[in-house]
Length: 427
Picture (cartoon, rainbow, N blue to C red):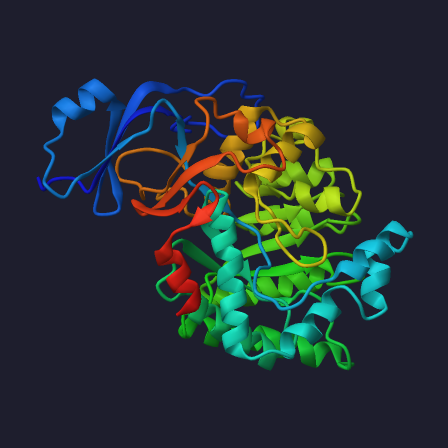
């Protein structure tokens, strides 16, 4: 066996290796005090107590040794829901909501998503690529090592295909793993009147998207006043026929049968769920559909987050995401999402960390390769600035991350990305 690339020792390992991650009021996580982790070829080769691991490991001249000095070491965070591919900001919209205007009211007036569609169309591909890379790098500095990125700010077939091509450029030599989601049915495009023709055109794109390997999954904004459950079923059936994974924005603002549909179709996940019914949550649980919580969005929109108690009662697996977007959740920080999940939704600290790691990996169908610290998995991990992982929820609004490793390579330290990551942004 060849010598390892990296050995981290004197860490407080938090593997997040519990066999069952459905919500069940997990209060404590197992830890390995004075733990060590061995990395070879971008994967975890061995974990255990420092004394035992070092005794079993043959170091080479190029092996990097890292003394964690008692810091907590947790899995790299997985962000399974972002809209990071866009141009522009929507600061005035924030004030409009403070003055009483609702999300759909702003959208119907040509604002909201439509404002970002116009802004995104106004810049060239190079600008859009670099801006998206900067956002992903900012997320990495908070511990994110796998990030989902959606299209959705094109809305027409031509503009959505353009965004998929830009996303391909974003992914080139990326320091973190980027999961791609096609969200052509995000809102109704202005100026398009023939509903059937538009839906047929969007359905017709999907086989080409798969053939050209432009996306991993398809999403739909299933919501009253946006796309109905019937619209959603039709588009997701076309996605599944094309060989793409399926997922939903579901029941964010009103009950729209989105959770029920996600369960019926066996989607990877359903996201938002602020207005989901108990029957819908149970249907999701019965069909292994992950509930992706977006507490930053609920906070920003002054909505009540989906409670942990309801998720525990339904027995659903829960995930956490930032929902980074310019209109309703302009944050890159999964630690902030964990804090909000605890303070606003009643998650325990253990549940919040599991949701941002193992649960979120499952929401992308990646649970076999990341989301925990275990031999054979990708060497994605985060060293915290404290021996207690609960610092993630305690220090909300700050960045408690000391160092971030993706595939065994350092990508951020003390809130700053490495020169290698900066070179990726600029390339």
